Amino acid sequence: MTHPIIFDTDPGVDDAQAIAIALAHPEIELLGMTTTYGNVDVSTATHNALLLAELADKSIPVAQGAAAPLVKPRHPAPAHIHGANGLGDIELPSLQGQAESRSAAQFIVDTINARPGEVSLVAVGPLGNLAAALQLDPTLVDKVKQVVVMGGSIREGGNVTPVAEANIFNDPHAAARVLTAGWPLVMVGLDVTHRCVLTPSHMARIEAGQGKLGQVLAGSYAFYRAFYQEMLGIDGCCPHDSCALAWLVKPELFTTHRGHLNVATEGEAEGQTIFAPENRGYIEPRWSQTPLADVCLGVDGDAVVEWITATLA
Ligand code: BDR
Ligand code: CA
Picture 1 (cartoon, rainbow, N blue to C red):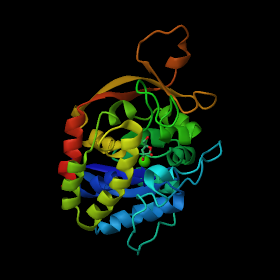
Picture 2: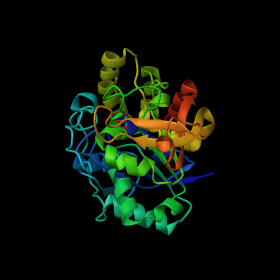
Picture 3: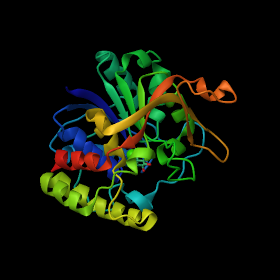
Picture 4: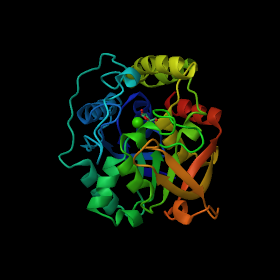
């Protein structure tokens, strides 16, 4: 089966690897990329998305989107994790192409309406573009095939606050709209991405298999890996965004649970994702009133990392 997708992204070192997968995997048809601020500002995200496709000799539409969160002020980009240029501060080749004139949200609306029921939205950054697309065309909830979100955390705790994952924390108001919109949605969060560790030997295989793009993936990974070594004490990194594509193509590697998602939009728990399993009674019904969604809580991490590596090697 082939999966036509729109990839919504803030590249970003782990985004870059996921983009390489979306460009390379024979079962993924990459219809376009939409960009958002997050790991970098949005113009750098757009630059990187265009450049990564060019390095793979592919011509893919890239539409620029959200430059800031819907409500709260924008946090500074995490240059200590992804580098100021989003790709580990390595020297990059120059870019030839340019972005679409359409906005990311309009691109999402047009692309899904052109093929109702067929297109999956895979979102691996803050969720402003998806929220804006829903605002433009609420009928997307019935026309998108599925929405795969890398973001959130249920049992694992957060990576930017004690309880919040970065993509959700970056725009909790957008995340609240997207995670409760009632479209077919799966959340691929830290509960599973932290079980996947891509080691230097995996990266050596990827570098060898990806030509010019492989050099950028490996060079940026070296920077990203230093952060993981310091913060989590692991020799390797968590390929968060590639896990969303692993779920798309290999859902059997994951355990999902169905239930209701809520997002805390303010206060100490800002950006926290809250999961109420289907049919579980609580003291009040308020956590169980959002539409049902699927949440990944278990994964065969070694198999996911091997799938990523084999796809790119
Ligand atoms: C997510 O945050 C970003 O920094 C990564 O690219 C990934 O999408 C992980 O929390
Ligand atoms: Ca990302």
